[in-house]
Amino acid sequence: MRINAGRLWDSLMHMAKIGATPKGGVKRLTLTELDREARDLFVAWCKEAGLAVSVDGVGNIFARRRGREAGAAPVVSGSHLDTQPSGGRFDGCYGVMAALEVARSLNDHSIETRLPFEVAMWTNEEGSRFLPVMGASGAFAGVHTTQEILGARDLEGVSFGDALRAIGYAGAAPVGGRALAAYFEAHIEQGPLLENTGNTIGVVTGALGQRWFDVTVTGMDAHAGPTPMQLRRDALLGASFLIQEVNRLAKVTEHARGTVGMLVNRPNSRNVVPGETVFSVDFRDTDVGGLDRMEQGLRAAAAKIAAEQRLQIEIRQTVFFPPCRFDRDCVAAVRDGAGRLGHAHMDIVSGAGHDAVHIAGVAPSAMIFVPCEGGISHNEIENAKPEDLAAGCDVLLQAVLAKTA
Image 1 (tube, rainbow, N blue to C red):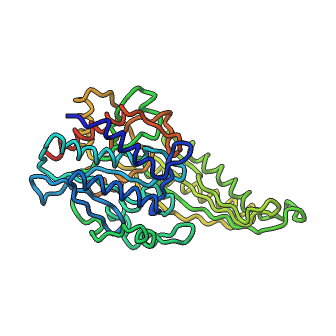
Image 2 (cartoon, one colour; image 1 turned 180 degrees about the vertical axis):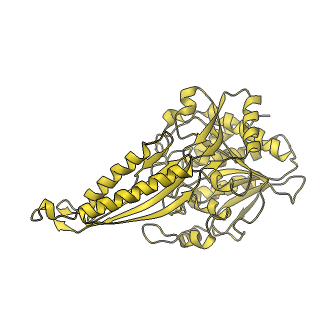
């Protein structure tokens, strides 16, 4: 049994119109009016497929297809619809549309599963507007409290809770606290391995652990002309030294990653020595020891730079989750599905965080990767082949059938 590849592609392209950018990407930040439009379309499609829709207190949406054992724990699949500010058409959205296509295909073939099947749409996976990243799936899994998520504020001071109510998706269903029989998430790889090795399916066995920090470097605003170099307390200069240290720390081992992706400089005037610089640090590794080593190195370097440059440096952790190992049986269901369908496949570890990482803490979970062009993601030119997307969805269908039978 196969999914309807044309319908999957049409759904992806239709959803991509909401927040479409001139370069062919999507800007659909979480809990904005564009996010509401995407949610409304998704809910409408779910209801057309005969699925029962519920929304929880942090805006997660679940669309349930009944099974013979109506009260049993469901098999769930999904992802997210929010994007980066310069995002692509497939990151997250593919996982939601693939799960919906599985439900539609089960309907097409009049398949009655033993266990219920649910399509999930998780709120704020990207973390572009509100921290923490993957916040609502984290709340479902008990990693964060509902109050923490609802109280988070964006750069304009708007709270998550207020934004959620404004778009009409502050649901009544409890956040988490229920059993899932299994969870699967289909996703573009967001890296180059599958494309470079000629494999269609990535059987994801786990994901790198992550520690994120906000670093605030405080110096003194001063006039660029009259202030001698040796008397300056230049926050941006100090930040530049520490940013280089992030890069050095991550190059020590093969699987470590270190990134500074956000920087705010104040007062950001051409002829003023910067008095405050705020930047993000994103560390990733395959083991907690590597994450600890990079954090310790960062803090030691910050203390040294602060003393030498007469600055104050504050480092605040914003995100932590340990390296993830997915459930052996769920991973096997993905691998077996790819093999039965004749798709070239390989085991792979995700370098990115996904909602599945949190859900793996409360349910047997696994992921399915498909190639993306050039390994490019979080970019408006992100692209994937329709036949690869269909292959990944076919594998997802096989995994769901195996777990709902």
